[in-house]
Length: 334
Image 1 (cartoon, rainbow, N blue to C red):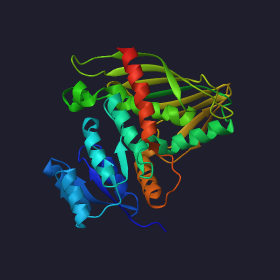
Image 2: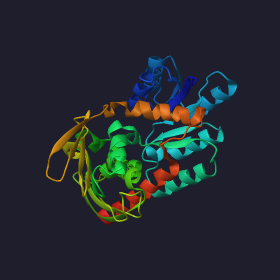
Image 3: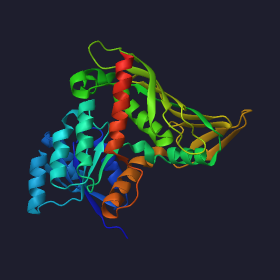
Image 4: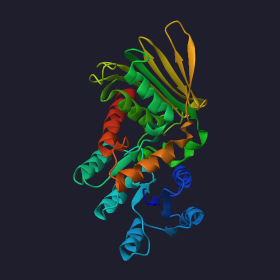
């Protein structure tokens, strides 16, 4: 039986709530023992929810860890991407396993530095939190493609878009702090999903749109194609269309088109996948909701660290691959 896995959460902003909830839902497998944020009130509030200790800096956390006054087996880094390099470097120096929020960095140069750091510390578990890899629908879709349910995969269509007007005045759309907008935020998930399904790919074209003057992109339409064969039903050249948006009607969908049928998942109908054959006859496949993806991801992190378990967690190399594609698409889309 696996031991309790203790974590420190670094960053007490919005996304930390997903990891906090995941720990609570893990049935005691993962517990939070420390929270770090320069906003001491935010750190204290999140820490109080878990009976954890609050710290203002990573340096203070690691000093307490070395002194034995706080214990943890890994760290979840949930800060803005522009400040992660020094944080992750300090954790790696202290031999602390890392699960870092996506994207890996706000620039390609930063992504390369972090991927290089991971490559130099191969024995230390270091992952990027591409949580959709753990959505039951995604796992099931991948299984159906591998079994040939829709024949040869022809196209993947993925839309992650919604209306987020509040982002206009936050760091999310500040080019210097975020490095990119809707595509870097939502599209980075899409790029990793594409890699998860078909392997390496290439950018064939992209168009970006800017609603907010002086801010990052609010919409992106990106076309990619698979770089090589990936199993009996996925050939080189498989097409993918990614739609990302911050200023449009909510759409969170994933479609896999094959020459023998279609598989469709709508995140707003979280417990069903729709299969259609070539004449349009539909079948509903029941699945568990995607709401469990953060918990499954956190438990996978625990198993990878404590049990050296084989995992589908995204590596820093995967994070760099997504960043490289994202940088190419951004340059083509402007």
